[in-house]
Image 1 (cartoon, rainbow over the protein chains, first blue to last red):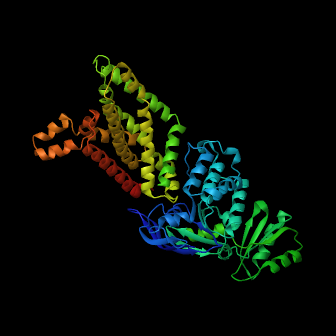
Image 2 (cartoon, chains in turn orange, cyan; image 1 turned 180 degrees about the vertical axis):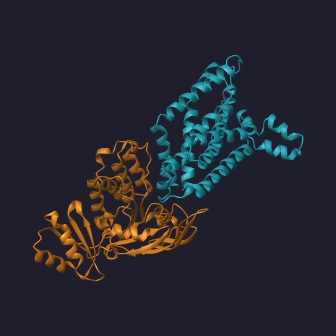
Image 3 (cartoon, chains in turn red, cyan; image 1 turned 90 degrees about the horizontal axis):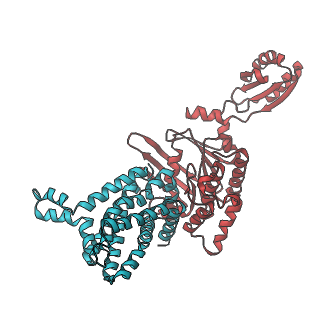
Length: 306
Length: 244
């Protein structure tokens, strides 16, 4: 379990993290979201024991990150922001170094091979870290973090700089590990939340401003249960817009002429899908597409953190 | 202890992973020989000893040792790898000592490679090999003292060039604390006891006696305390500034 109690980090003129408290339990994959400079990395660094909180405390699996630092660090796999590593070392030497520090000896040493295999690092094993592409660097950082099969993982922007295929791979890896681990991912990529997280904390200016499931968060969106339709023939757009706007349960209609798309936002709590589809059928307007939105995280994110 | 050894091995390996190690060793050997034969008049003196060799070591180290130590922490901070290192289950002192030992061993390798001089002097005459051994120990300790100062300076900054310059200046002050130009400046207005205290802080006064083949416990204690002090200072500075 990760426990953060009233964590604060103040620099001379700046409060980077301000009274952040939360708990994360096994099986939870927590997305730690926030605009740049919101305090995500600072919070991660305090949890990882790299910087000392100004006040408050945190523990990893019951080990206080300050009083019992070595035990806390042993329970933790940490990918720092930017995935730093020793540039002049080969990937093999670097991972062996980490395995040594993690005390992987005897039978447990087999884990090294598993990690190399799992992150597909065979082809770059003899290359120095400096010569790696961004994607491989990130994967080396991830390999280092999961080396000792820790119960808790803190990953600071794990998919930053990866191409879509690599992102998919890393997310698959996270999903696979999620069953028996506690994982905290800091990110500003919202699609990541849908892909891997079952809980979201949004921070802004050092404070927690939302703590919910992705679904719960999406439900706060104006677009929650909105109906989006695309018309077969663009010339029907104006007529359809007027008709939909006239529906009593529709609060607002947004139109995108370029795609001949029309989005109807419901009044709170109303279900407008049947009414809209019925209306289209009645007026004989052919639809290319009709779907119900669950809510837009980016819109919620902007509303909350603005 | 295990972690100290792991960190030391990695650090030592990284010296040899780049051309730094080889360039350093070549320059060290070339300068050491040049000083010995030209400035020291190794042949002209007609004495079978290595004094002309060892007496230049403090000056050689003044510029070469900060070149070894400058990267110790400045590079870790610049590349961010310090965050990786300090979130492994290692303590700060294990990291400080491990990295210091790696640099010291590296300096020791360079020093050991001057053995042809020792062979030469034994071929040409019959020197006091005990004194030569003591002088080697003294030189090795001197290197450690300089490295500890350099390690501290490297922890102060993210910039290796700044770390180098601070290292040279720091070592220079400690070196000269026993020289007339510093001592004379204090003589006129400080009590003799304080002047002696300043002089006793000097690398040179302690190195001089070892260099002459006298391994005095007081000199060993001096180097041990100086190294310990600067390594503790390194750890303190890192603890405060590692994340900046």
